[in-house]
Structure formats: structure tokens, C-alpha cells
Length: 312
Image (cartoon, rainbow, N blue to C red; front, top):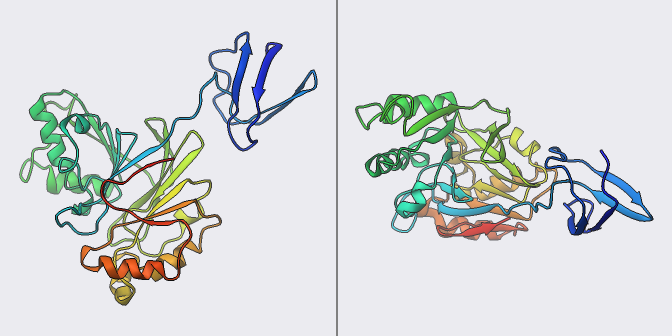
């Protein structure tokens, strides 16, 4: 491939994409799809490119906290995190927070495990779509164990309609997509990988990457290993802390973390992102957990609250 001879580029940093100030001539519509580094000297001009795409800057990753509590009380909602308005991490809260139009925008949901506080809003979203007669399908991703629980015990035509076969099996409102741990897959331009974590039922955390950015969401977990080994080049970690230090034995027995256990888990990271976002605090222990997380102070740590928005 040859580049046209009338180009100038702005060098920002060899670890980031580069932006074009002026470009005379044309590049092919698909230049490269994979990340690369090219060193080029052209009439004394050094050009370094990490990602070469036709004048396309990486999009921001927008995160909206719908629910981040380990128990439900007024103003405190169960786990759900909305990415770029369309991709949902867990489904503990949807309709209690989102407008009708915001609900219709959701097209994909990643579930971490089968516990009720992480999926209880999904049946109601399906019903809202059905009543609105939208004729759209929401893809729900999860482990086989998670999807089986939804089919057999929740949306089973007894507790709630089986929206995976309604209005018809060819175009259902809910389409289940079984995932395999440690195997990457694509959802809405995100490269997604699920990693098994330590909980009382089969559970995963997710690492999502897009345009050079990445976030990790643990879901519910006690002390674990693999997901921390894979946690590199991330913008943020969303990690649970459910109980205070005094209830460490309970936390370990139920597959959760305390502030002291979180400190030990973060020590397993080879590098720490700029933001460590704490979720899933039990409402009854909010103030105690806040105090314990403040001493010793963890750089970059923030306590999530409902309604928070981030952009990476």
C-alpha cells in the first residue's frame, strides 16, 4: 500500500491515535482493521501511527449508573450500568429510572449471574416492549446457568411470560445468547470477555474494550484471581464491596468483598486504572463501609451513587 505524498499529521503521543490536520488525496476506505505501529520518514517528516483509520477519532465510552446498591430502599436501586445508552451491564434496575424512550434504546444486556437483584427488571422491560408493540429484540448474554434460571424459573410462562418465544420464536422480544468464560465476543463494537469470579452460584465479571478504552465490572465476587490478571490498559474498574470489615466471614461465605478484602484484591493488579468505582454496598452498612474505605485511602477510589455519569 502506498500513501499519497501530500499529507501532514499531528503527533500527540505514540500510545494514542493521531489526528490529521490536512490530507491531500485519499486513503482507501478500509486501511487497517487491527492496531499497528508504523514509523515513516517522508521528506524528513516522521509519522507514527498506532491506529490508522480514515479521519475517525475514537468515541467516548459513556457510563450511567442506574443502580449500584446491594439492597433496595427508596433512592437506592439494584445493580445496573448503562453503556453508551444501549448496552446494559446487569438488569437489577431499568424502568424505575429510565424513560420509555430510554428503555426502547436498550438492545443488549450482559448478565453476570442469576441472582434476583441483578436481573429482576428484565421481565418488566420485556413486557413494556410488548405492550408498546415495538417489534424489537433485546439480546441477553449470560452463562448457561444464568440463562437456564431465567427460562425455567422466571420467564417460564408461570411466573412471567416466556418472551424468548413471544410474539413468535423467529422474532422474540428476548433472545438468549449463551457465553463461554474467557472467550471474547463482540457486542455493539465492544470486545467483551467474561471471566469466572468467586460467588455462591456460577458468576462472571466482564472486561469491555472499545477504541483503546476498557472497563472491568466484577459483578458479585469474593476474592478471585483470573479477572485481575487480565485487568490491563483499563480506564476504570467497577468493583463490589458489600459488607463492612466486621462481617468478613459472612462476606467470604456468600461470595462478596469488604473494604479490607478489596485492598487485598487490588494488590493483585499489575497496574491500577485511574478510577476504582465501588458498587453494591448494603444499605444497612453504608456509613461504616464509607469510613473503612477512607482509611487507608485508595488512590482513584470513588463510591458510586445512583445517577452518576462518567465518560472515558
